[in-house]
Image 1: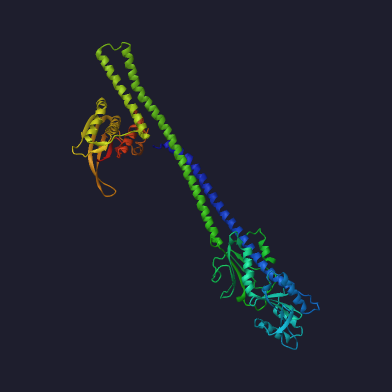
Image 2 (image 1 turned 60 degrees about the vertical axis):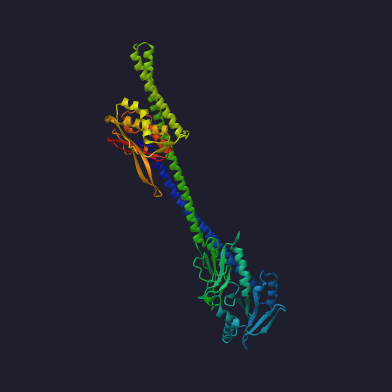
Length: 589
């Protein structure tokens, strides 16, 4: 159905605000998605940083418990026995008693070389033995300190711990690993069991702070920080053996400072929230560590590395979720746009259809009123004796008969259109000669052509192939085309009917013959803008309405329906002022 200029203006007035609203929704949706992505990233970063801080705090607490348990009063006269008792008490309550491999007292005397005493847990006695090879650097420093001053303990402490600290004087050596404390007897050394740390302490910490509903949410590794990385612990095979470029979190366990309260750098994939208090926690007890022994190599530093297990690194995971949310959101918005567009189109089509239906009712009423008026007037003249002679009665009878046939054709056309639209029309197809179809058509329209004063030209070759179809339906189709030509034929008052056969190539390159029956006129023609709509029900061109040519707008629509029902098609060629050619295309039998 054709869209008029007024309807286009109404559509624009309706569509433009909707487009503006949808654009605003798209912008708000994009901003909301970005905010949600940022909020998710901050939340995940906060959670990850807190888990790493708690992991570090727990590890520090486990080792601090040993130091706290072995802390002895310098005025205690019981000597080395106090360390044995305290160590035994700690083992009874410690979650990982095997984490301490050996407890040593490294003694320095003014008259002899440093002496190493190892605690025998079974007898609770310190036994003198050979100097452990892992403590060679301690012996060298103690020997150098012993030759410089009588207060060897204080001298050694100043050499090894030049910056002091507030962790009770305890220091950490990652290479052994061991905890070292300067006491009156010399050095108290707690040698840690690396295997227990690797196989029990670190796995338990990973399970405690990086576990979700379905197990570990993160891959966790603790590696040394040298040029050749060594994996101390890894939750997954091979994780941490190579550089993890997309790690979600990294933390240096020691911090490389001799100060006890040192800010351990924690790097996570996104900037955490500034309102969570994590920054303050990370720079206080959460990331404190023992001061390292002064000459500890950085190759022995420990580094915690975590990476999200499901969905890849968190940064990429959040970005993928963001893209997915945007795709889903804009997909829904697109469906909304399509729905609104369909609603607008349906509304406009319903409005146009209602208008055309009203025009159809008006046209049908006019088409009915004219013959009824003639019939009524003729009947009244006959009834009132105005018509007296037999010749006048005959003439009036012919007028009434003609108008009655006109009414009958109009009613049949409307009923036939309704039947074809609802697929209730039943056809009886059979092989037909083209000449047979045209003769049946002209038999039904001869009186109309004669009454209109039109000149008819026919061109029907004799050797045309047969077509398959319903004779009544095909003749009805051509009658509608002829009736249309009579209405719009103009002053030329000429109609041409031509039949021909055309050779066509099918989709499978198979040649086939098509019969074409054309009905031409030399009338007002059809504007190119109206041609796409002329086969729509109830449609009438503006030029036809302006010329006050009456009609129902059903003739061409009915002709098209019949052509398609016969597996054919109906086409038109027309130019304004030069007439029109309607062609019925039918496949051969």
